[in-house]
Length: 552
Image (cartoon, rainbow, N blue to C red; front, side):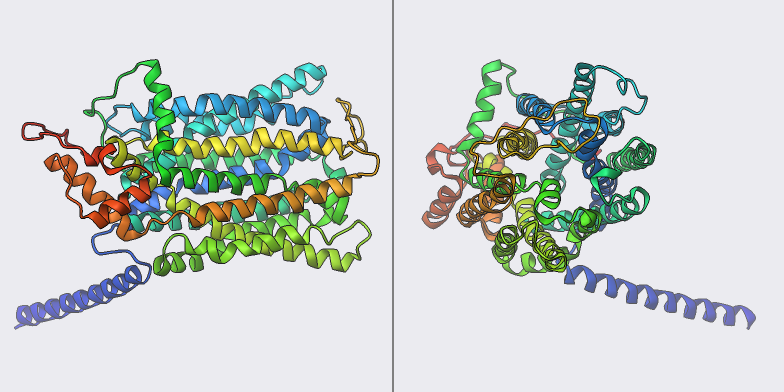
């Protein structure tokens, strides 16, 4: 009897556990359905792939927030010399990035095309962030030329390692998330992890560094900044290595590489632009970043708004961009990837127009309200436009494969890194030159190691006019060009499914069957005639055997 009771109790407990598990499973299924995760999709790869964003954002935010003022007000460099360094780094990246991408696409490894590159660069990337702060004081007492060369070389080292990581990381997404909306889910998880790294880094930086004025940047503050930078970059290295070891990617070990002729390298870069979807993404992204690069917030706060003491708080507001992501995700899920940009881009016009209403003699309360309003508009506007670009970026790789028959994720997505370099380095240096033309200099900084130069382009044009031109008028022109170009990008989820279908048919049977309407649609998306595309040709594949791809 005791055994029978025990068995009955065990059965009841088992039934209860099963019911409880069923309840949790139903709850999990409802959650997955609510966010658009289809049956069979696994959340774990999304978590592991996105985890690298924690360290990256922490390192970027801390280093980016204080590095330019550090060079200007602590080291004593002029805007002109900083611009020269940015220009040289930009030229270097523009030369090396496409070749890095081509080598990645030709990589044969059990880990896949991209993971081995990320693993190799994880620690050098973190060290590069640290070294550019001269942690050992090698050139603090050196000559002007030695100081310039040290910060230039460490900047080039950082640019190179960062390019390798960015290109390889972005290029992983189309291979580990082949479906249209699945990529949005991965990017959305990335936004969450951005916030996990970004917001705490902003708060800790504001608490630990406590900058209220440019006069606060001195060598007494340097140990605190360096300590924070080192900690953030240890976190960066840890999460990048963790991501590589836990995120699987198909092996590329058995895929034969294309010919290695030098001419093929250059041709491979040029024929990417045959892809109309890529061209629209390229120019829209290009104009977006060029709109942002003109807006030099540091000088604007100091010279026009006269509110440098709000810098830390405004950076925290900027870091809250993550808060807009759930709305962007739901809009994308229901209305497509282009909708968020259409709804939020008008806020960027407000952001740039508000720059024109401020003056150094504006009432303090008025300037404070306007600055917070500007930052709120920028945060929401940038989040929507950025979300659209992040989501359409991987899809252009399938259009390229439809045209060429090759998978070239790294080559295509390296152009995003190229545009980032163009905007943050080459164009930043150009902006620095324009600032000096208008008399935006650092003459008030004490103990300059370099002499600031001021070349006014006209006696009646002062620095306030110049900063408003750079922060208000020119960005509006570029953001309009960005919006106009993006409107021409028409790909939908059904279009992407059609592209994948014809690619798979061409691989499997040697020919792809399409209706006249489908042919017209594919020609519109690709910008190429059907007969000139790889999917429009025929091949006997009866004896052809594709190499098997296995997850590492």
